[in-house]
Amino acid sequence: MHPGEARTPPFRWYNPHMYFAIDWPQGLEDVIKLFIAYVLALPVGWYREREAHSAGLRTFPVVAMASCGYVLLGAHSNHMSLEGQSRIIQGVVAGIGFIGGGAILKSDSGVHGIAAAASIWNIGVVGASVAQDRYLLAAMLAALNLITLRLLLPLKTKLDDQPPRKPDAAPK
Image 1 (spheres, rainbow, N blue to C red):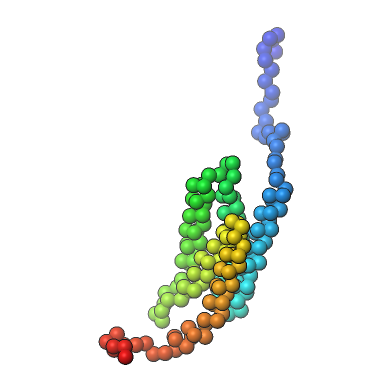
Image 2: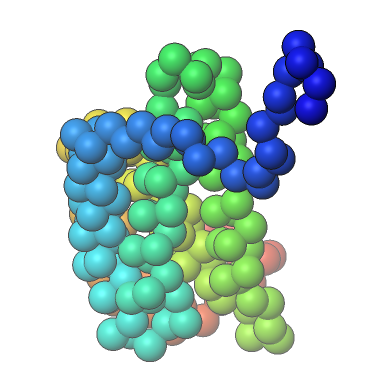
């Protein structure tokens, strides 16, 4: 090295002075929100599992938790605009629609899985609602989902057992 020449530090593939800023109170709040979303989805998943449906106890809580997590990532802050947050929510809705679409099956006897797809979509909103601090909305969505699946099933079964109306028959 010559006098007056600047000494360059050796190349490192990592930054030893990297600073990880963890906001522990915010992190704890986020974990609590994920847990709330998970717990709100459990009764719906439990009911679907008991009725021997393919989407149930594991699917519903994970969808709620993931939706909550994505919306929390897009929460309005110094680094996220409202437009960015809107795009994240749009992506969550599209992704949940894709998952729900996979639950719908068409066979010779009809179409099955529409209630599962709608429930998956609804549970995604439960998670997003928790992320937005809309706990009453989240609880109501989860409760109405469970009520719809559980209490309206006997009525649906009764309607399904009735012979179909003929298209040319006029209502009386």
